[in-house]
Amino acid sequence: MEEAQEVQHSPETCFTIHMGDPQEVHLSKIESNGVKETHFLEDNSFHGPMNESTMSRKRMYYRWFRIAIHSALVLVCGSAALLLGRLYYEKGGKSKWMGTLVQLGGFPILLPYYFISAPKNLATNNSIHPNQPSASMLAFVYVSIGLLLALGCYLYSVGLWYLPVSTYSLICSSQLAFNAFFSYFLNSLKFTPYIVNSLVLLTISSTLLVFQNESSDDSQSSQISKKKYVIGFICTVAASAGYGLWLSLTQLVFKKVIKKETFKVVMDMMIYTFLVGTCAIIVGLFASGEWKGLKNEMNEYETGKASYVLNLTFTAILWQLFTIGCLGLIREVSSLFCNAITVLRVPLVPMLAVIIFHDKMHGIKVISMMLAIWGIISYLYQQYIDDTKSKTINTSHDPKASASVDGVHK
Image 1 (spheres, rainbow, N blue to C red):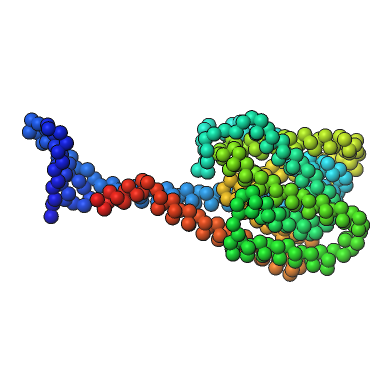
Image 2 (image 1 turned 120 degrees about the vertical axis):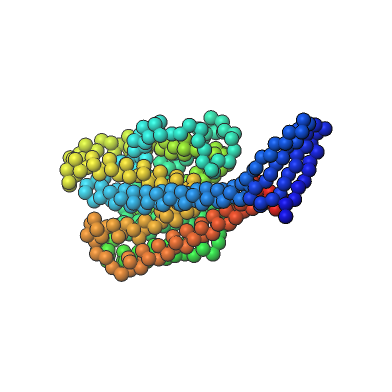
């Protein structure tokens, strides 16, 4: 049955709305001269929410695609850079400051990409506030984080110089606990059963490598003096704490200080902090006097001068790609998730060492890898639950969706 409602709009004009087919609305306009104009309006209220839902689903898939790319950069490039760093020391490299410089000093290769590819005034969905921090505040942030990075990289180089790779990787896994500790205070992190399960599994997978190291690398471990082992252990633990603090501080700066996360902001964070860190490392290189022995080091390198240069060059490039992946994961998810992906390298590095250095593969390494993968899946599932809840809340509070629903019921 068709219903008609007449709305008196003015002394000269009135509208008559005919509610017939639920998919269309007849709008009749009667002018003062008696001429009647009828318009048929299709009800698009059913299509709006569907389009928004489709777009939301596409954005979610695209976001997880970006997370996968960044995770691959962290895993592949980080593992390769670590192995090349160890290869540098094994083949005759002796400068700990040079091993530190390649971790940050490769940032100039990103400058062309920074200036050419940076979109103009294009903010991500995570932009929070339009206000910009002062130049002095940004300078303080860049200098502080840059110096923290330089110190952490140097401590990592000392640890890699004194410790076997397996022991070094095991101690590095403690950065996940440090990051969780700092994120609890700085980023209001809330622990859930899946996150706790992930942390426990990743810790166990790393701990298993201790038994592998003691059972198969006794001869190598015995060659390391107790004093050097203690120094390497302390430096690696301190570096892991600094790395966890860096991740939490970076997330805090994005949300509380800079208050937006555009492409330019992220690249500024990386380039300026790396510039400060590189300058600090160069000062340390010259102040320590290690620069005097670099020429002899290159001449005495076991695999030749070309291999020496290529090793340092590719190590620097890989560390830059690794950092891009870290910053991307911090933006897309959180610093703790970034650290969880990073810790997956703990069992992955021995696996790559089997292929590259022809190390023996034992069952305990396989178990360690499976536990690490289980821990990552547990954390990913928690992220899926959080995304689902966030999507439901956003849909229920979306004014456009609410208006469309109200229009349907009216």
